[in-house]
Length: 113
Image 1: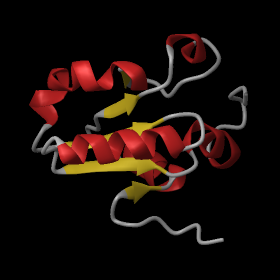
Image 2: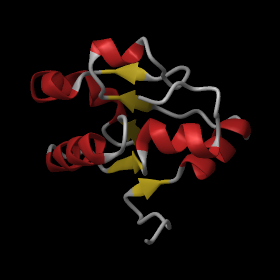
Image 3: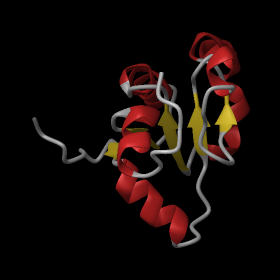
Image 4: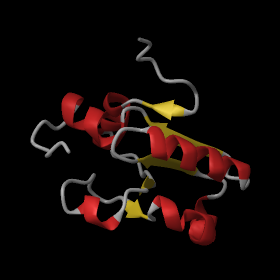
């Protein structure tokens, strides 16, 4: 299995390095409200996947910037990233493996579900 990200993805370890370096990042959580209480990445914005088609305009300020998007395992966020790219967002990166891989590689204290 290839664990290297494409130019449309970012690994949890690479994201953590950028966070530790103090980069200003826009991280979008597309999980549903009930998932947020289980675990989440600090300082992430949230628009549930089901609301994204009606709410993506809220991200207009990020249109030319970078958006890092995540979900539980990376599948839903990948679809949302493709949707945003189709709406003209230039740089949308999917967190490979989602918050589950983040818990495995970066923060094992997070509850996995």
